Image 1: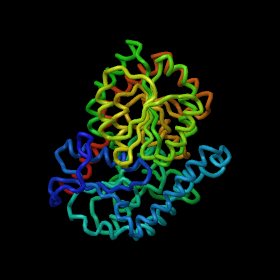
Image 2: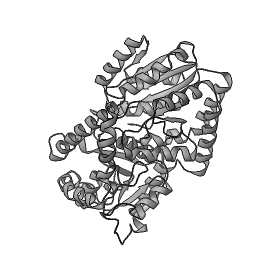
Image 3: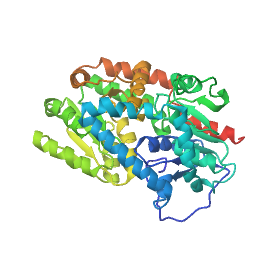
Image 4: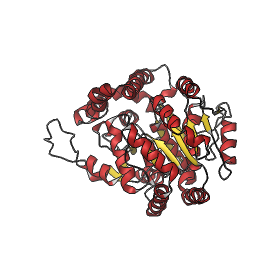
Amino acid sequence: LTSTGNFADVNGPYSPIDTKNAILIGTIRMGFGHCRMAMAIASAARHKGLTPYWLDMMSFPDNAASKTIRQIENWYNLGSRLSQNSQWFNRVFWERITSDAGLRLSGALRDKTISQIYAPLFVNVPKGMPFVSTHPWVGHGSVAAGVEGVVTIIPDNYPLAFHLVEGSVHAVQSPSAYMGYRAFISMGEDNNLEHCLPKEEIREVGHYIDHEIVSNIEYDCSLRLARLKKGCSRRFLLTMGGAGAQVQKFADIVGASKDAIKNEKATFFINMGDHKGRWEALEAEFKKAGISYTLHDTWKESRSFIDEHREKPVFGVHVFLHENFYAAVYATNLLMRISDVMITKPSELSFYPVPKLFIQRVGRHEAWGAIRGSEIGDGTIETGSVTSMHRTLKLLIEDTDLIELYCDHIVKNYKQGIYNGAYNTVDLALELQGR
C-alpha cells in the first residue's frame, strides 16, 4: 500500500531490502484490526522518509503458522457471529472468552511457548532493522527467532496478558492501558503477583492513526461543521468487522433510517470489507425492506466516488465491497474522512479521529474502547440496547450539537498529540536500534 492509498504491483521489479532507511512491520491478516494498525505505522513511517516493509504471517499458506492461525480465526469468526445472533451465547460464553481467556499471565506464557512454531518466519529479519509487531504471535515468534528491539503495539484499551511479549517493548494508546499493563492488573491467577512490568518495557504513545488522516483532521472537521451549517444530508459510515458479524445490526440501522434516507436527511456509506457472503445476506435484507442501494466494487470506482463527494452532496445508500483484502480495510480510512459520523462497534476504530456512534460490542475486550472514545469526547457511550442506539441515531440525524461537540474535541485532542501514536511508535522502533 502506498502513501496515496494505491496498491503496489506484486509482479513489479524486485528491489533489494533497504535495511538502513526502512522499518519492518510484522502483522497477521486475521480480522481487520491488526492490519489496520500496521497500515497506520506504515503510513507514519513513509511520512518520516522510511520505506515500510510488510511481513504478513498469513502470506506463507503452507506452513504450520498459517494453518494454526487460520483454524483459530475460523473459530473466532464463528463465535463473533453467534454472539450477535444469540444474547444467551454472548452473555454466557463470548463475553467471557474474549476477556477471561486472555487475561492471565499464565496464558501469555502458554502463547509464548506455542509461538515457537512461528519463529522460522523471522530468522532472516536483517539485524538492526527497526521491527514493529502488531500481534503478540508475531512478537513472540520474532523474539524467539532472535530479533532484537521489537516493538509490540497493543490494540484496544482493555489490559490482557495475551498481548504481552517478553523480550519486547510495548506501546499502548492510553493512560489507563499503560497503568493496567504496568501493574499487571487482574493478570495473576489469584491476584497474588508481587512484581510489575518494568517501566523500560512499556510506552504510552497515543492512538495509532495514519498520517493522511491525522494531517487532515482540522480540514475534515471543518467540512463536517460546514455541512451541518448548510443542513446537508447527514453522512453515516457503517463498517463491517473482520469477522463479518453484524449483518442484522446493519439491516436494522438502515431500516430504522429509511424515512430519513428517503427525505435526504441521512446518507449511508457501508463498507462490507471483503465479505461477499455477508453482503449477499445484507442485500437480501435490503430487498425485503425495499431499500435501494448503489454498489461500488472496484478500487478505482471507490476512489473516484470518495474524491468526488468530499465536498459535493451525496444521497442514498452506497455499499463498498472489495475482493482485495487491503482495499477492503483501507476503504474505511478513506470513507471516514468524508463521513460525519462513523457507526462502529468499539474495536480498533474506537481510536480514530472521527465522530463515532458506538453500537454493541462484539466481545467484552472491546468495552473499554467505547469508554476511551466517550471520555476524550470523540464518540458516544456504547449504545448496547436497540432502543438506545435508535434514539441516539435519531438525535445525530436531527440535531447538530453532538457532532459539533465531537468535532471540537477531536481538534483539541489533535493539538494535544493524542492521535500521534503511529509517529511515536516509529520513533520508538528507531530509538531501540540506536537511531
